[in-house]
Amino acid sequence: MKAVVEALGQSDAFLAFMERVSAVAAVDRPVILVGERGTGKELAAARLHFHSPRWERPFVPVSLAALPRSLVEAELFGHEAGAFTGALKRRAGRFEVANGGTLFLDELQAAPKAVQEKLLRAVEYGTVERLGASESIAVDARVVAATNVDPRLLVRNGRLLPDLLDRLAFAVLHVPPLRARHGDIAYLAERFATRFAAELGRPDAPAFTAAALRTLSAHAWPGNIRELKNTVERAVFDTRSSRIDHITLDPFAAPFPSPAESLPATTHNTPTPPSIPLPGGPGGMIPPGGEVQERQSLSWPPEASSLSLPAAVAALEISFLRRALAASGGNQRRAAALLGLSYHQFRGQYRKHAAALDAGGKAP
Image 1 (cartoon, rainbow, N blue to C red):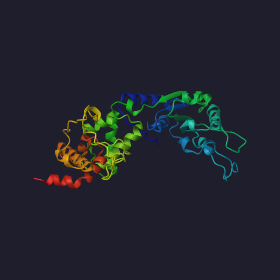
Image 2 (spheres, rainbow, N blue to C red):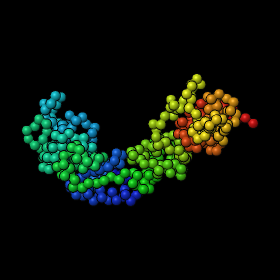
Image 3 (cartoon, rainbow, N blue to C red):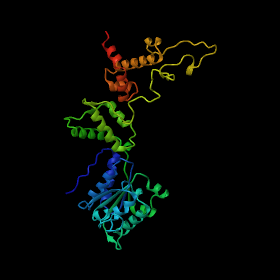
Image 4 (cartoon, rainbow, N blue to C red):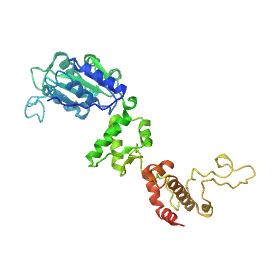
């Protein structure tokens, strides 16, 4: 039975790439896929296989970067019993397993030079030699290789044999990055959200607000589809309503203040809040004569003028939190966005001043 290889996308760039894959699939020649991480190179290789006359035979993917360098040769070409310490019996390599089908070699540049020499011979002559063997074995496996670096640069840097590149490059397919697939980000986000909501057992997937979609569309997505999928699933998991209005693009942003932002009560080097202008001229310079005209920012709470610096800073933070919550109708995610904070940073500030905020909310 023919396996179904799903293609997700509606953009012109993606559809043109899929059309090219289908055309190349019918020609029994090697292929190189060039694309950034997370673009779906293995998915493209699978489509090449399942849309080819070899579709009923094995599709064997191998990540060369995931194999210890000392074992790459044995994994690809197999070994005889006693070929090396621990080789207790004969073992077929991936070329033999893929006989009649397709062998997908991901991260081609991770193969040692000696292995690249044997790869060249296998592609050129259709024969492999197990480690410890004295005779070659005929194999018929279509090789599809992939790299996330320009192969010409790999050759110039000595990481890829030029003869191997020449032999593999019958067709060079460039997998489009997500940022070049205009219109696909929202489409994929909705698909990923629907799937993950079902996986969580929720009857309906939350819908993205216009602001959330703008955030997704404006991001560069260096991790491409893999990064988008993780981001959307995280948003679905964190949302308890029917709408997603906040997107966490950087899950590694700490929800706690950095040491420079901390304001312990006994510190002598407490930084001045950036929203409060220093007295005097620009940059806090004291004018000639030493006299300073006392000024206050409109955002500085009047009640803070008679407090100590740590207490004044706390009063300022509480004032900003109250105003942001009032402007957002009590929605903490929107309040965080108004203040330029992540949701977790906002929650940290809210918990810090919860008693004062609750008391303020109950005041007549």
